Length: 238
Image 1 (cartoon, one colour):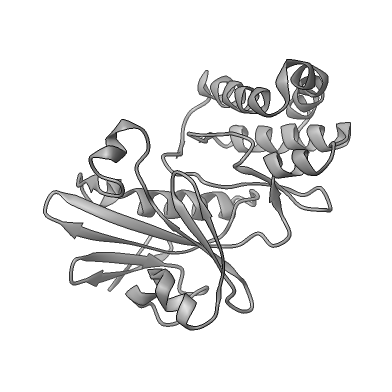
Image 2 (spheres, helix red, strand yellow):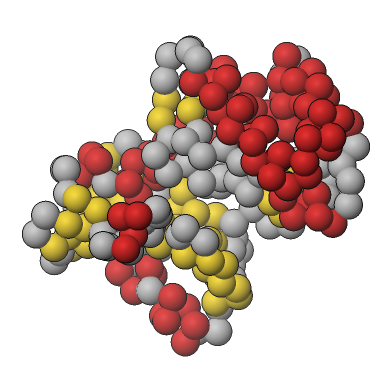
């Protein structure tokens, strides 16, 4: 056992686990098994997409368990196995460390709880547990439930500017990875393949990706109506 980047690393028979000892008591591989939580009656919800995520009703802070899955054509060959390139390149570990860094900088991200990988030869599988942001819904769902006001869009832009100011490059910034609660608090999730970078054109690329996501949801007229407010918030971060 050793400590790395503020986390506790524990070697296992076929890989390793990484956790915040302040958030987790007994660190066991079974914590990453949805069937373990279902047997305890604490598996609240399952969401599906490129990855698989489960809501876990732990107390006092509920968790989100995510199993990393491949996307695109490569998923036809292997749905959840990645090529081993060393422990520092394990996707769940990299995301855990990035989230820990962003949380330490007081940015609104889910707090990382634990990560693990299981290695088999030149391949590995991995999982991540984070604290759930209770009461928050993806921006995409908020839009389906009713219109957002200008202040909401300015707040989204302001939060994104704060992330970019510290060099946080989100690899897949879209309307599903931005959460908003009923009080209007904005958070950003799913930093898989994200990283910290010096200032550059990547920030504009993040915004362009989000704009394309909003176009798919609301169309050109909708984006034309709200984009100026988002950029106004981006120019004046809180």
